[in-house]
Image (tube, rainbow, N blue to C red; front, side, top):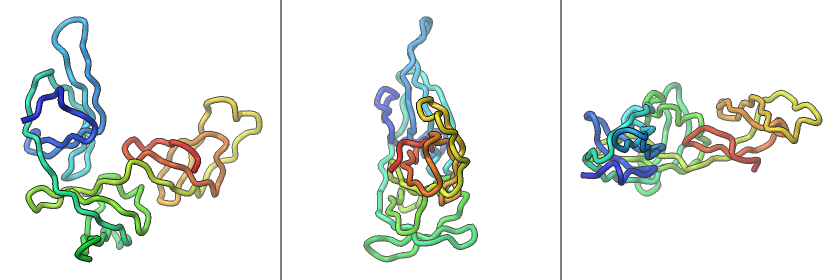
Amino acid sequence: MIDTSEFRNGTVFEYDNNIWQVVWFQHHKPGKGGAMMRLKLKNLRNGAIIERTFKSGEKFRGVELLRKKKQYLYKEGEKYHFVDAETYEDLEINVVQLGGSEKYLMENMDVEALYLDGEFLNIQLPASVQLKVTQTVPGVKGDSVSNMVKPATLETGLELAVPLFITEGDVVKVDTRSGEYLERA
């Protein structure tokens, strides 16, 4: 059993008959009442992300996952194909099960497949990826000092806000957990 005080980014536990991974957490102590833990959780079975608040001291069943290295190969219709790094076994995953992770996948990218009691749950991406900007509007000269952003489309189809100095063809570093621009690579 794990307590809410033990939650950290990446902690995996069972709640409401599902397996959840902590994406973000915040300890909150209001002026009145007991402490709470605000969480952003990812369902490892279907990739859905929810926000929940738990009272401090609540206990949950901790889960130990088996992690296996996989390499992303290609997309075929609604299916994504991965190969096991050791056994060369093919793993086919439906786009719905990836829950948005597919927008960060590049061919030959290494990921970790998460298993619980032999059941495949989901993949875990690296913390950040480098993607090429394929489409964006030109920035206005003189706006490079401000914190203004503009929309950009990356080579995987992901759309995000980038600073005005980013141009088409630039390679940017993107946080896979939040989907935010980090820096120019």
